[in-house]
Length: 257
Image 1 (cartoon, rainbow, N blue to C red):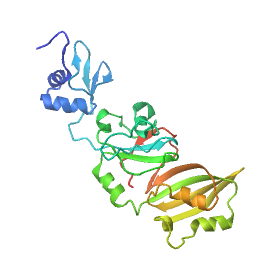
Image 2: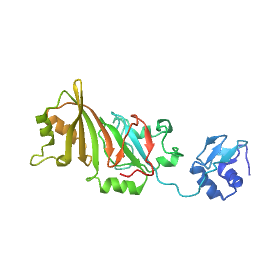
Image 3: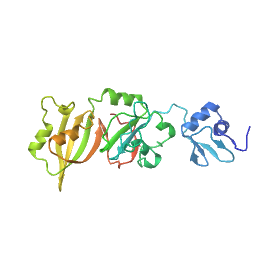
Image 4: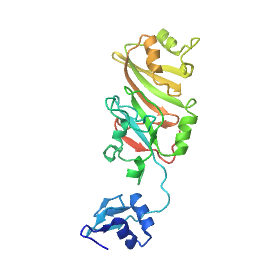
């Protein structure tokens, strides 16, 4: 029965298609329903005289779990949740999760991919990155991606660009790449080379197996180098590319870590 508040959107869609109420809810939560041209994802929403339409490409097939790639800016945490599943306590750097909004989506991403509320449910951030660093961070709902990033974590190569003050001599570079006895875990898998030089700054390319937060800072400190910038540009075979800091995109269907 209709009320002054209108009828439930799910009921209107069920009559429009026609389909069952449960199927109507799936269409709505899948982002396929518009009310006066605006996507509405809540089946319990009320409608009166508004125009309700169903996307011509609407499907009831189970939605593929989402994986989002974010260019985390320096000064944000990596979005990982505390062991109790809650967000970090107030007072820590702002969470990168706050950037996973429609306004921050990279333009020209996957065709037909738009951010829905269901994409943000159960997102895991599994690859740590220091709060002071920028670069690629992964959020995923996909158990296959999560398993790859956790089970193969020690074997997966990360590529990081380091900006350090001044010139880096050949001897300093040898020290950075030397593996002493009793080395810090992960140090033996780090390969560092000079990428470029500019006035007063040297950019180092670092390839390392596993994330090992703090390791590069420790190596530079031991070598007497002062880091002015750190950016992770690759995890496995997935590249950050030219995505600006603070923006994100969906992992494309052809990309594999």
